[in-house]
Image (cartoon, rainbow, N blue to C red):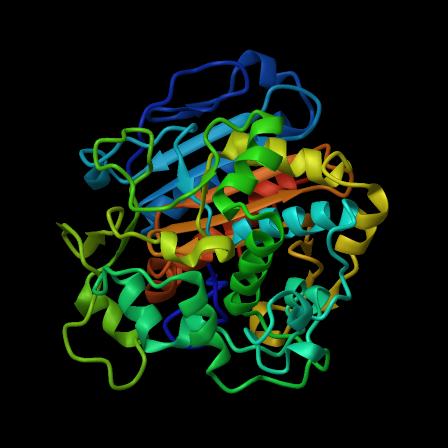
Length: 423
């Protein structure tokens, strides 16, 4: 799930180590970091891996509770880096293989399912949504499937509704249905006439999830399993349908600021003391147990860095649907200034221009979880940066800057280029 940088929900906000076993292509994080001998011989990742280790260390030192970084330069074993604040280790010791809430990266998988149905001639990108979901979307005769996919529909984002705030913080525990979410989003004033602008909206992907279920008769969770996760062997990727099991030691813990530190970024009129529900951890709250499955097709995927790399490689190399449709997926629209003019949006896929090169993928965020997953143009190289906080990157400018720098460092390492100086 995601939202623009205004209000409580922000899409782009921009210590002590836990030990990792030393293996091929893995950075050991116990005191001083060192690379494996196999990685050290490679000019790409290995040549700049120590800069990446330093960037990960700076992120946790700046206040990010934990980070997981995976870089594959396409020429050998990948590099994995894990850094974690010591106070969070008793809850869960992060590993490179942890399952993680991927937030709006889900949109790329949802878009993939839509394009697979287009390839099967069960749907067309320029079908009006009214044709498929009669009466569900106001002005649906003029809003096409393509507009929902690339956020040019003009529909407002339900993430700014007060009920969504209650759900995200765990203060409302009865999740809405996808139909109720769509009604919530479509009850808000539209941003612009269909096709006349760009505005990021989770409401678009809620409608697409309902569309997928209407056409196939299957749940989005089952479609992801049968059409993507199963065929690609993604054993730790699924659409969450409830809160995680507290006893699941594979699931990364996420944290957010307590009520006092959250207050400066809350919407005007929010009651004093309003904050996340969960166990207190000093000035933070463990938000792992909050059920975030209500965001569904817009943001409920759980996955791992290695699973997501396999998905990204399959997608950008054209293995998941015909390449002419991949070309359609990569036709982009300029995002708005709030998201940064270096980002363009295709059909559930972003084109991002960085100091070291152009990458394709998506970012995502839910309370306690921030993710950036990208690949190069041909799907040969991949990078993932996961952080165990989202709103903490907004309340703490140093943490937000350090996380941004870490994402840039990881992308530059993927391309085998020097990491630029911190912004």
